[in-house]
Amino acid sequence: MAALTLLRRGSAPARLLSGTLNARNPCIGATQGCHLRRHFSNNKILVELDEASGVAIMKLNNPPVNSLSLELLTEFCITIEKLEMDRSCRGVILTSAAPKIFSAGLDITEMCGKSAEHYAAFWRAVQELWLTLYGSNMVTIAAINGTSPAAGCLMAMCCDFRIMADNPKYTIGLNETQLGIVAPFWFKDTMTNILGHRLTEQSLQLGQMYTTPEALKIGLVDQLVPEDKVQSTAAAVICNWLAVPAHARQITKSMMRKQNIERLVNHREADIDNFVNFIGKDSIQKSLQVYMDRLKQRKQ
Ligand SMILES: CCCCC/C=C\C/C=C\CCC/C=C/C(=O)SCCNC(=O)CCNC(=O)[C@H](O)C(C)(C)COP(=O)(O)OP(=O)(O)OC[C@H]1O[C@@H](n2cnc3c(N)ncnc32)[C@H](O)[C@@H]1OP(=O)(O)O
Image 1 (cartoon, rainbow, N blue to C red):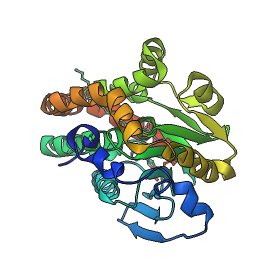
Image 2 (tube, rainbow, N blue to C red):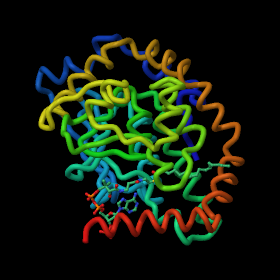
Image 3 (spheres, rainbow, N blue to C red):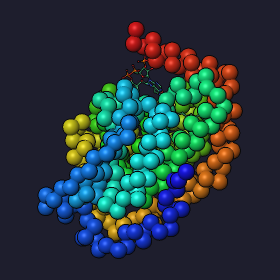
Image 4 (cartoon, rainbow, N blue to C red):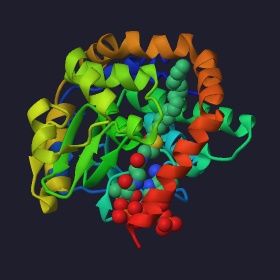
């Protein structure tokens, strides 16, 4: 499948060279009120594309907690690629349709009691999500309107900018070790580029989930806003990002992310083998099962 837009699609920057800055500035059409909105949705992803601004709002819609199932992962990648190919779309605001949860991370049931073939297909889809989102040419803003553990945090970290709802109940972080599993090197690389080596090491070993003020303090999120201002702030922020000449911004993004992306691309099959061997171990299956049981017991 696809992905790696930044590196692979040499023609992508050229797509944006044809327009002048003003002609492609999203805020101009938007303020003139010429709104052409297109809605489309797969089963698990809702999209509203505003052609005047060039901004798509992409909502994860997999109740109750937006866990990333194989189906959602597949739809996610198809949606991003579709938007990437759409000349009227230049930026994406990624958010959740679920109240209080951005995403609960990978669907743990996809990693329990399944065949090696299933684990391989699932992990390939997780890789694909990362490659597609992290490698996107578009401006990507995470509007984090709820708790966001593990791969939920990873998705947010793939974006260019993170705005989180300032709610004391929400947390964000890579908590994999708390489940008895290990974040792979490309999760680690993504976090290292944001937090630096020392903090990432500590964060990953402890499987730390951060409150919103903590996340802001360490730079895991860029901005905290009241819950009802998350979407409007994301709309304002993306306008600023889209006002930068697109080809220059894209080349810069590519320069910053290229090394990480190439590392996974060059080790993709080995990474899948690692995952399949690791997740299939009895001890790991047991850890995941205990974790799922605990989640369910919390409610009783
Ligand atoms: C040599 C070494 C190599 C090592 C490297 C090689 C490979 C790497 C190996 C593995 C890497 C794996 C990377 C994994 C990444 C992940 O994303 S793992 C997922 C982590 N997610 C979590 O820990 C979140 C767990 N969920 C929660 O904490 C809470 O559910 C919540 C999100 C805070 C929401 O709380 P609440 O609103 O109270 O809702 P409930 O807890 O009641 O949940 C509702 C139902 O949803 C089920 N559920 C929750 N999360 C998940 C999930 N992630 N997957 C599947 N299902 C989930 C929950 O059980 C409830 O179900 P029922 O209603 O009880 O049926």
